[in-house]
Image (tube, rainbow over all chains, first blue to last red; front, side, top):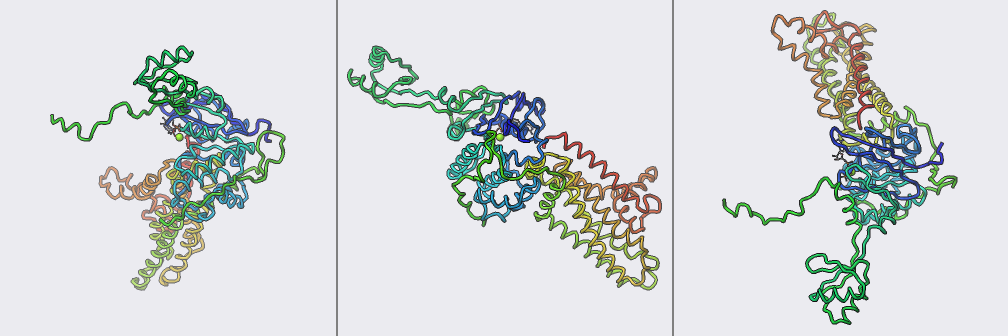
Length: 323
Length: 290
Ligand SMILES: Nc1ncnc2c1ncn2[C@@H]1O[C@H](COP(=O)(O)OP(=O)(O)OP(=O)(O)O)[C@@H](O)[C@H]1O
Ligand SMILES: [Mg+2]
């Protein structure tokens, strides 16, 4: 029976160790129906591993994950509970899109007409008889999404679905996820782009190096983390600081002569400067991006840094020294 | 590439009838719930095996080898044998060469049935759709065995009938010889393929598993050929007798040696080995990550 806890995914102390590497570390959270839950983390954070454990593909080292109160392998017709799009193309390239979906449908006793319905829904009807290996990346993603929708499931799980999609495809999938959630389904989607999640997700789960960093509503995260400020450059720095101080406005210096005023109104500052005949070179309202907030949150847990701090050297700089 | 442009998806989200009962917050699908069983997995694996070209290739080459070599051998012997040469010979036995070569195709198909899913990543999709891993392996085994057996039986019988017709000088095979030379060898070849399927599931790598299986078929015979030392003669004899080509020839009662396996022994040996390997693969499948 589908009980009152329908469509929930519950993780309890979920842990996965690969040899010496702790990929997922004691994760506890719940994914709820009716909303899109974003699953965020930098590369290697353990998102895909967590999803594989939810689907019974990887065995947890410790802890537990339950779908609808049950372990995944206790589901008798799993495709009607969960549809999943995994990160890697999990398709035999020599099989046609139609046959790929047909063999999945048969394994769960889903009527064959559903194959045509989902092919139509993702817009692959015209290439249904073509081999999957000839598909472009976006078409492959669509085939994966068709497979996820096959059982008309209550839970949908997408691992980085917008990867490799064109803007039109991205728009389509955002719309799809939102409408699936609006129908009362549970939608769980991973990404490493905060800006992407801000547009689709209602709830946010952030992990870094396998550990839970945040489990919050999207609105709450935005309210907490999006700082708006005014950025000013002026040759008369001291005068402006005095004037602002008299007006009760606090400004902070942020290097190279730039002043920042938290929550300030550019109109008011402009008027003050005009009254006191202060020259401004820049007066611009700024919004700290959610991306920055996300990067701050995960800063300590990012494993694979690019070395952006080493200045790029001109080609041949080494051998030109001639030593 | 001639693949058409990805067509425009419909802007409208799929909305297959809204949730029926608002009794709980979740979504209720109009698709009926069924309790899945082995039958569903069998239907799925049947669709899989018939919808890839490698099946057509391996089985096509198999039939070509078995029938082609069988008929050629029959014709060559019929043309060159003088009266009396074939006296007392079992005419079915000339199907041996084609089957021995053809077994490579069955081995390849067996390995591909399991290992190719690991190569392509399809195994994840398969196991998500059917989390009962044992059921997946069992369904693959049944479908593959049935296909391999039927195709081998048809080709071997065709060759047998043709050879009995061509080789006038040979004796008429008895009923038991007919049965062993058609059904018997077909079961043996299909079992060899099934063992390959199981090895593919354990190794999870197509090329590796095929190499192992071909080694298993050929190595004992080749090693025995190079064992010159007197002290090893017993081992040499055993390697000869239990090598797969020799066991295959037992089905035509023309073993290369007089001791060693006889009658239906090769089939029981293959059955035992495959059963043990299957149990191992089954246990590993439960334990390992997909
Ligand atoms: N099968 C495996 N064997 C060994 N280590 C693994 C395996 N799968 C994942 N890992 C390791 O576990 C960690 C988490 O990997 P995972 O793929 O779950 O990260 P992710 O959050 O999905 O990253 P990305 O955003 O790059 O997809 C990584 O350090 C990875 O190297
Ligand atoms: Mg990943």
